[in-house]
Length: 321
Image (cartoon, rainbow, N blue to C red):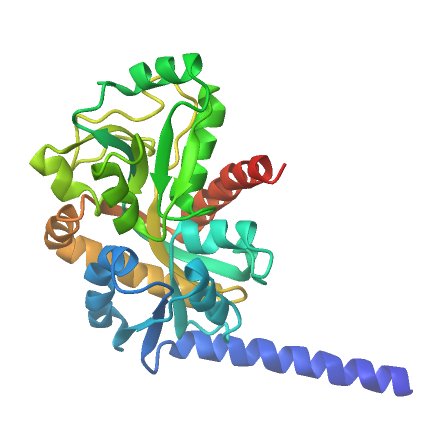
């Protein structure tokens, strides 16, 4: 009798929880939504703010940004991973914070599976750049030199085991060459080192080098994405140059794992409406950072993050040997 009574209580609890979640999803949202940006103001919020600032129109509630930097994005993302899966606390997602940080830092307790992808919103793009005075006019010239001079080329990144570092390592592995990595604390010092002639090239986001490219002091050799960027239509992708690697950098929003599908879909639909109504204005805003709109639904965004996980897992494994 006791066993039957316990089973009855458990069944009632499950039924009550399901009913509560269904009601919560139907009423969503009935209060403001916060999006945690796991970095200082800059790259990630530049990509997301043009969308998030307009989503209240279609959700009927304010969407606010909450900056929680630290541990390469791990502090803010970790806080969201441990939040209630109700759609009211989201995280500004990038491959760096959601995929790379937990792979590279054993102290980080979350994984990409700790999140429910909601939407990709923008493509930011990463590239390899060199001084305009460099003796290598193209990436293939650089690779030819690198094969004859192992460890004869140095490159800077915004930090060891960060996304700009790991993408360059993944590329050199694909190309069969060795470059010597010189890490810096942030993109600013990494580009300053390049401009000062302390390194031969840099693996970088576009925003820190855009003004220097436009001024003619730096030249882009290739972009890491699978398609050319609208801001730099003359710069080839690595795949175009014959290297089997393509890693676009998409910025979006994710919820804690377990967030009801109905809630995730409501947030995505709001993002979709924002792009439909304000897409032209958003595209102009993003273009100032060398970025562009990249709207992906929850399933496609999840597939993208899975692909990123596979790519960076191999790069981290290589460096840990």
